[in-house]
Image 1 (cartoon, rainbow, N blue to C red):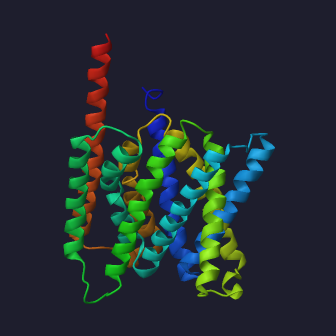
Image 2 (cartoon, rainbow, N blue to C red):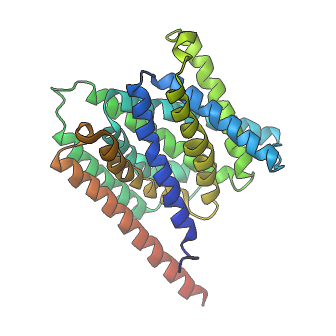
Image 3 (cartoon, rainbow, N blue to C red):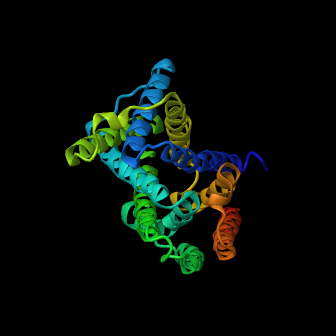
Length: 306
């Protein structure tokens, strides 16, 4: 039984690591770092750590020109996704940013048939709608009068979810043609290059904004190496065995893991209303319902083969 579900266990281990991303991002925000520098350092450290690993393990970093173009372009989408995510945390908190990231599954149900040429599944749309219902309960309970930045935080979190749906589906296609490590390597350098150029082109940051303390470096190193290169690499690899939609729907567990972690690290600052947790429960219920449908579908397919 464990062998049958090993990739699902691995997926949730990766999701738990991703759950720490928001916590680390909030710590960096509290320490004085803004979203742009965080993403730049994250992608740079992630790329360097992955490159060193591949060289030590003597893994090839070669990729054809077509694959290079696709992975570098996808990296730009990933960089924009991370910027929107960390900016949302900066404007609100970990709980708000991550729970709205749950709409990624809904976006995937529309994006995947277009990019991956997959047949549209109405059950997936139903699951996405259920997620939206949970999100709607949360939105209705937020006090926009007391915190005007909630609107922008929510908007950025939704943008982040949409971009996550796009690059997840693209990766599910790329991983069938190219090595997952090479994909991740070029996506990280592509995203790093793009966001660095944008940052200095806009002129909103000076070189002094990139001076960091030892404490910040430690957090950034964990964020870049463990929460990025390792977790992202494993996330791409898992897509060889689990459909992109199932991965993205399972990633809805990230807010739940992250909320628990945020409560442990930040206490009352992360405590939300009762309705917030009702909405979050609907998200979890959706994931369990999706798992049931997938299991039932596999059972039917196995019987048909027999």
